[in-house]
Image (cartoon, rainbow, N blue to C red; front, side):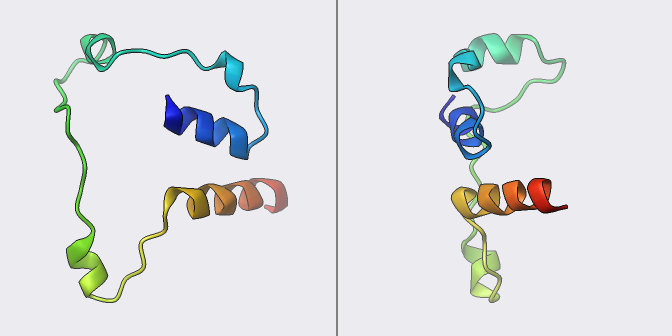
Length: 69
C-alpha cells in the first residue's frame, strides 16, 4: 500500500482511493503462486558500475516523462 500511495502522491492523485489488501488475499486471485519475499540484491550490478535508481528518483522521472513527453 505504501508503494501505491507513493505513486499517487508523486502523480498528485487521491490516495484515499487506495485500499489495503493482504498478500494472502492478493495471491489467492493469481493463477501462479508467488513467493512472499521477492527482494533482489543490487550489489553485483552496482559493483560493475551501474547506478540503480531509487524509487523516488524513478517516480520523479516518470512524472516528468508523462508531463513532458
